[in-house]
Length: 261
Image 1 (cartoon, rainbow, N blue to C red):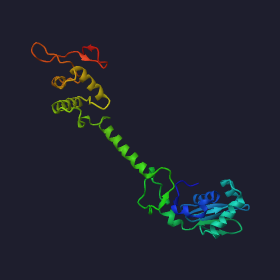
Image 2 (image 1 turned 90 degrees about the horizontal axis):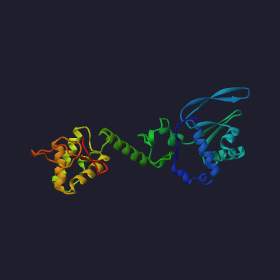
Image 3 (image 1 turned 60 degrees about the vertical axis):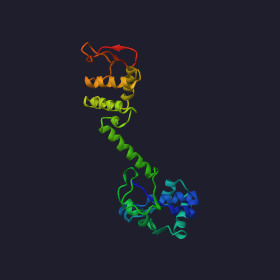
Image 4 (image 1 turned 180 degrees about the vertical axis):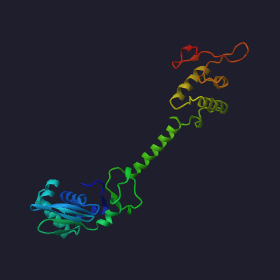
């Protein structure tokens, strides 16, 4: 069995065979059996075999083989195959005393332009695809592919940024002076290869709140102290006798103990 796909016209909804599940199954089987390209097949006849040339849209039909593959009584299959030709003009049957070749009518119009090429990856449309009143028999809508592509691009962008979204572009504080100091602190951390990401940001802001008693003046002082001393962590404000900041106790992630680095 060949790999690939077939195309189905929406017009099948208005065809009488769509209302008959057995007929529809046999018709789809015919489309799937048809070859997509010119090929030569071996056919058993009597005690030997012969080589038969098939063109796109053709396949060798055998009543008993069709019965086995479809799980439908052979007489029923034969009846509908003849109806497809005589009543609906959907196929053409060429028979001899050894085998039958079935040709799908208008195969080139509905199938050949795309199916002779490799199936598009991830359900992407090809430039040769006909008008959209014909649909490819795939399960996933095309717009889901676009969403997945966009998600993949965003994921790749974050990976290129070291796994972080650009925190510096997101406004954190309403106070413009505090916001400016915060951005300087983020920039310093980035240069130290310890960039603030979405995971670490909430913890750092929590520490800032504990160290500053939730006032903007103290927040600015705590951040400025770390910037001035090139400290990646935040510490309580503490000055020595000369009025310079010295390395004080750092609040832990639990927010209740202090330790010396």
